[in-house]
Length: 274
Image 1 (cartoon, rainbow, N blue to C red):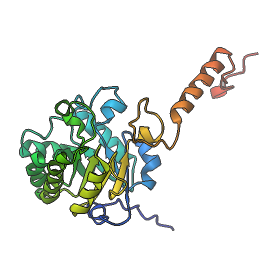
Image 2 (cartoon, one colour):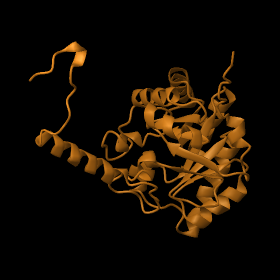
Image 3 (tube, one colour):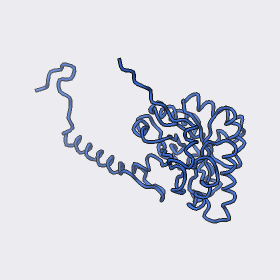
Image 4 (cartoon, rainbow, N blue to C red):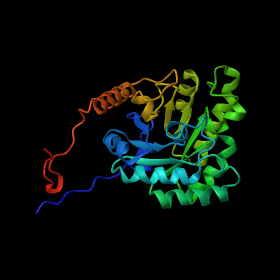
């Protein structure tokens, strides 16, 4: 009698230990079946609040709710075995106080089965990161271009283009690392600054539109697959599924209109119509 060993899910300490070592591979995921396909190849999956734009057609991530994140987070956990799963805390679910952030993060952990949550912000959110970390909730931080703060930033703009901006962003990185974050996403950040921060802090940096010298990289799954109508300039598409889906839909429509789409004969023992 053979016994199949259960696949061990990657842990927070394992991600943390990858600082300066083998690059960390990550993608976003929003549903079980796509998560299942990519699970063997990534170290962690992020259930990002980008789902508001990618899946629901929103202009920004600001309309995403906690219930939406929990539903999609649970689906991704169900579809995976190996990757560590991180779920974004949406706008309005953690900024008011560390206590409210803890209450909402507990919901996310309990109702999805994920391992960690991600919070946007640097020095302004460091107290909350420390509060959660000390109470058993692993936190991934996110600095640089923070989409939940897009109204204040005035759009999706690269951060750190001018050296005069570097000190504040470096302070954000230092603050989240000191507060107990086990990794930090650097988004939309000038390459020299992202490389500099990677060398300054002792937790892994995960780049997205930042530096190839970060400790890892993350990409939106739909961007990787060529499904985004307007991908960011830094995006490298590894497939062109958008064109393939359109082509398949066209072929299907043609088959239906030509009445060449196959039926099923003798279903449930029914006699074939002559």
